[in-house]
Length: 85
Image (cartoon, rainbow, N blue to C red; front, side, top):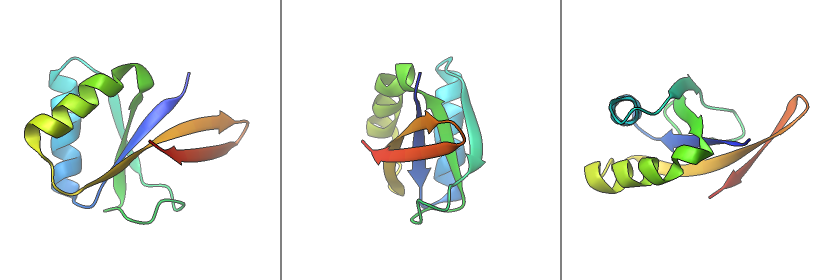
């Protein structure tokens, strides 16, 4: 199963998004933003693609203005491919 990476330009918005996801009962993890994705504050959120609808609801509801996009993570052995969604 693929995961989703949510990227923000502001650390505070990244932490708020993680908090809203957890309050919604969804598991998420704060990670260092991959170097392949440059427009970021340094940390991003990874969550299951099953929770994409909830994540989009949170983004629309709380209007975290520094949101830079979401990327689907495809695991290929030790390599990861990121595709903007």
